[in-house]
Image (cartoon, rainbow, N blue to C red; front, side):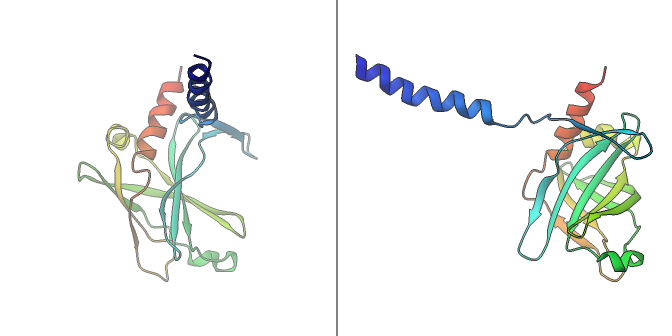
Length: 170
């Protein structure tokens, strides 16, 4: 009987420990911008990764407008800022509808992080909240062709993040 008790503790305790250490899928963070705007965001998720290129992304909002943020790699160096493309991006959803988002801004956090932001049109919000993303096509630099990323990882990330933000609203 004692052996059964200790054996069950060995099996059950790691399950509870694992449940406590898993990150909250709706871990919404906030920061105040220099202009005083309060932004809500979640940590970027990896969508695509090879030894040559990668793409991370997340949703950022001020609770009025929603932005799709992408962190492509490689990206133009700071000295080549004029070469950064300001073209819109195209996203193919799991229902095979293609959405286009307007370029909003791009900036460097430091020499190793480059962020591109796109405004999510309110008319596309419901469709993006209901469907996964299959493919993202983006032109990072004016001197290169459009990069197409067939998403293999975290296809539901944008859908899940938007739904988290909408659940959190009063």
